Length: 233
Image 1 (cartoon, rainbow, N blue to C red):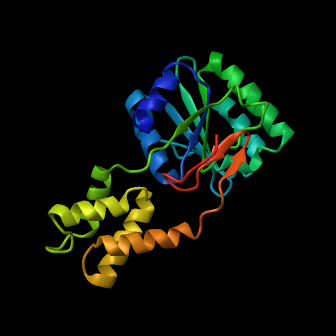
Image 2 (cartoon, rainbow, N blue to C red; image 1 turned 30 degrees about the horizontal axis):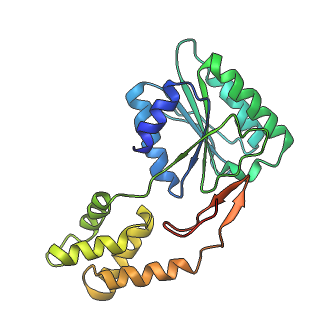
């Protein structure tokens, strides 16, 4: 099930605290925004650099205080509408007792006001006070079809993208990459060899492995740092 399908179900069921684990925030934001347009839901986003922005309006505030950002959801309440506040990389602020308490209050009151707190983060790091209030969703990595579409958008000249078994080998090598990583790997292959090859993708993938931290357990959850890597229970 896709992120938008999952998210739509939980919002209709009024899960007012939603944690989305994602390494591709821009893609996730686009998906959430499309869902909100389709359902006529109001969406606001916040990050510490750009502040608070309300989709479909010119409302942008230089709110750099995360506590104020949480409380700003109250200003989005409408009599019969649904409002979402997406907080990016908010795991950095979850050690604050004031923020934790504000989230508790906001998530509980959201049942009556149809307001939803969505945290978008590459890791799941939920304080014990909030564990029972958040549901965790995973932003899936691109499928083979999506990877093929990315490759086709980059390798546009004849012969740059192989056919048949060689194309399947390229997609095999690309599986497990994010959209951003796949775009970079395909482009690097074109620069190096004038075409997309599985060998270059595997080489780039091995370079990415060097950046991986050992799996860590956060709030009782084992965080996998690479698709398919053995984890803990």
